[in-house]
Amino acid sequence: MNIYSTNEWDPLKKVIVGVADYCRIPEMDKSLRCINYADKENVSEVKSGLYPDQVIEESNEDLDIFVNFLKGEGVEVVRPNRSSKVEYYNYCPRDTVFVYEEKLLATPMSLRARSREYRHMLPHVAGIEVSPQYKKDDLYDESCISSTLF
Image 1 (cartoon, helix red, strand yellow):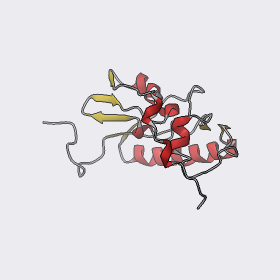
Image 2 (cartoon, one colour):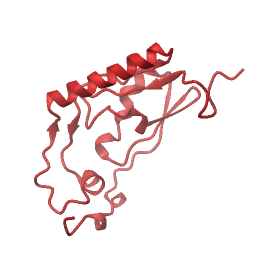
Image 3 (cartoon, one colour):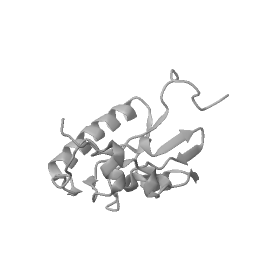
Image 4 (tube, rainbow, N blue to C red):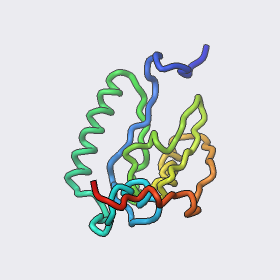
């Protein structure tokens, strides 16, 4: 008998839910500029640093309510480590790992600040396979950056 779901209709058994601790806007780099702020002509107003405490607290409160609901339904919940070494956030760990049966594959994001988020899941898995991380600037197409504001 297969203990893993191979379709989207089986009951949920185990899930990863993020945490909002230490969420921040990273320092501007080429990846952040081209991916998150391509629609802005001027990014000098984009402030880096931690999100306000109230935002983090309310986000964690909502996530905890969701986790308690899932546990009440018999779902095992795994969460990333709460670490101050977060470079962007651990709010969406599903973006940076792919789970198939007992394998956890690191799927580093093209945003440099999110390329190592999978490391916060390491204590929860027996093994992880890591795909290559791309750091070359030619990965980012600056022609997508807006020259006019909408």
